[in-house]
Image (tube, rainbow, N blue to C red; front, side, top):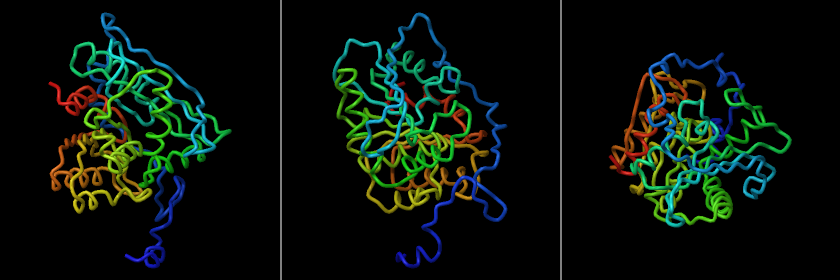
Length: 310
């Protein structure tokens, strides 16, 4: 399609969260009644016989040139291990949601247990939040972001260019490694990106642009819909030479359905495309809604599947 026709059809328009079309909006209440079926995985429970990894927090980090004029919170997980080089790497988008010790994932406890039980080799994990424009306060977990913060998150997470990948490669990872003085592996099969909703497509998009840097993706209720072009990925996967990316997808029958698209259908399209193109993938489709509950119940299992452990 030529650019003139593309714009004439309005395909270049970006719909905001509160926009209303045909009496519907992207800000409608979501149905999470199916989430009662899911509980945090057993490895999310703290075991007092298991040593806890170290967490280093950085609030209002503002040194990004790629996303200039933003502040973001970063937390780095350093496991209990004697190794100081060649560690794996996991980066979690919307990191606070995954790190929340009262949430559905409780990632650090899962990490502690799996590493201690030698079910996964030691790795560094970076929990990173999306940027907030300067002057915009952070929102408490479980509350809506301000319009400004929501828009910035969408720019970083939903865009299909390689800007966020460059942020990871050139800014976030060098900063984190400098703070902990530990060397990580360059092997993409031991480097994993994780995200929920827009963080899910963000993770896949970064790996797609450079699979030699990140070879694994876990997407929870990924936004492979028409927010900023992500609905094109199923077609792109089918028509592009297979890339060395291993993908774990999760969605549910009560996932979002709004102006941007239908998350249940879009994730089924992604799974179908990955299968068609011969990817190593796994798709878990449950009864839940647009939340981390189902993904949290499978979190330890998904990590072990990604890293080929029992």
